[in-house]
Amino acid sequence: MKKLFLLFTAVSFIVACSGPKGLVKIEPNGSEVAPEDSVEYELIVMDAGFETWYTLQDSPARYRSQQYYEGWNQQYVSAWNYLATQPGRRSFFQTIVGYEPGVDYGFKLNHKLFYYFQYVEHVLGIPILSYHPVGVVF
Image (cartoon, rainbow, N blue to C red; front, side):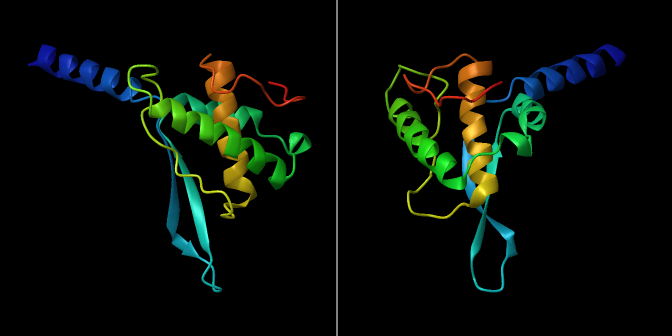
């Protein structure tokens, strides 16, 4: 019985640690709607390592403008979604990122999404764009 429990625990741990990579979602955050009927969005990243890395990278001294992040995010999302539609080319890019130009996702989401793309390229070593932002230090 003890061996069965240990086996179950080990399998559960491995499954939890080897969750799907490349899954990122932008969803309306239904719990917080401002009085003027605006919608707040939430970025959901299915990679446990990203949150720790992001926390270490997040520094107000390194912030850029929301327009800076929006511009880069549009380029990254376009390239990501293209790669996600190419069968057999990239198994990492499993989902389409629903980032719409012209929608105000706010500074926080744009910043975090930009850093997710940096994480994928610089930490995981998976290229998305052939050119990169200048002056972004990790």
